[in-house]
Each structure stands twice: as structure tokens, then as C-alpha cells.
Image 1: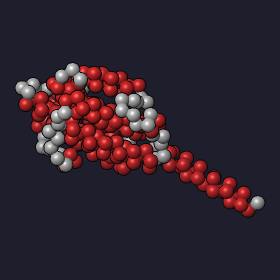
Image 2 (image 1 turned 120 degrees about the horizontal axis):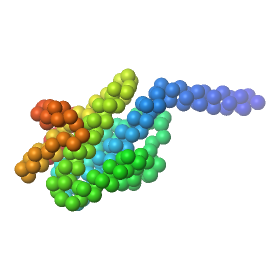
Image 3 (image 1 turned 30 degrees about the vertical axis):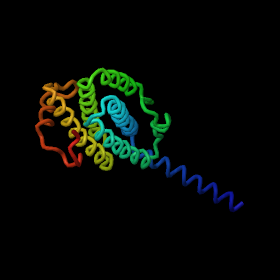
Length: 202
């Protein structure tokens, strides 16, 4: 009888702990973490594909950085005991739970496969998307651990965007933003290389 009571109490404590952990986040915060986990996967998967196709940087370097970003998001998923959408597809390349990100992958991987120029433009667009979404997610939470991760990812994405723009400029192509405000885009491109990147990506 004592053992039964012990196990019941243990189970109750475990359930309470789980509920308490998740109750610290609202639905918007939870959805944001899951979305950004897959958005970082989007970047990694597209860059993996385009590096295999074209064999040039910045794809080779940045794809490794995107894996680090995925790992950062995985840490948040583990911390708040959320169900990882990447695990649901066994982290297969090009497969996403989120339908919007699946469409982005299909569109960008197809466009980037047509030419190196289009591949570099696809990379720049991905980084624009990442920056825009991270700015929105930062506004949705007050939790410093989450803000810290998002801020790190945003600074890295700015570094990556600069790398793609530089590479396009080497081909005498001036990249114009498609998602970010022109003023914000110009500010990012003209700013110094952020420390979060740790290296030049091109």
C-alpha cells in the first residue's frame, strides 16, 4: 500500500512539474519556438541542397551555422518540454510539419537549383525571412532566455545576409530586399560584422 501511495505521489509531482513548466509559456510563445525550430531547419536543408548543387560558399559554411541554430532552438524545446516538430519527421531533409515552411522549402530549393545567382538570392531571402520572423518573436515574449536565443539567431542571420549580398555583388548583381524594409535592410548591410557569426561566411 505504501508503495502504491509513493508511486501515485511521484506521478502527481511529475505531472504537476510538467504542467508548471509549460504553463510558464503562453500559446503564442510555444508556437513561436516550434516555428523557429523548423525555420532554422528550412535554412539548413536548403543550404545543404544548394551546396551539393553548386559546391560554393557561403552555402557550405552557413549550413553548419544553421545546425547550431537548430540546436539552440532544441534547447528551448527541451527546457519547456515541448514536442519537437523536427523529430516527427525524423529530421528528414525537405520535410516540415508547418505547411508554410514546407511551401518555402519547395519554392526556394526549386528556384535555387536553376542557377548559382538564383541560389544566392534564395539564400538572401531565407535570411531576410529569418530576421523578420525573429524580430516579431522577440516582441511576443518577456522571457530573457528565449529573447537571448532569438537575438543570437537574428545577429547571425544578419551576418549571413551580408555574406549572400557580398557574393552577389561579386557577380555584379545588386540584391534588393524582398521582405525587409529597405531602410532596415540597408542598415544591416552597412553595419559591421556581428560577433555572433564568429567568422566570415563567404
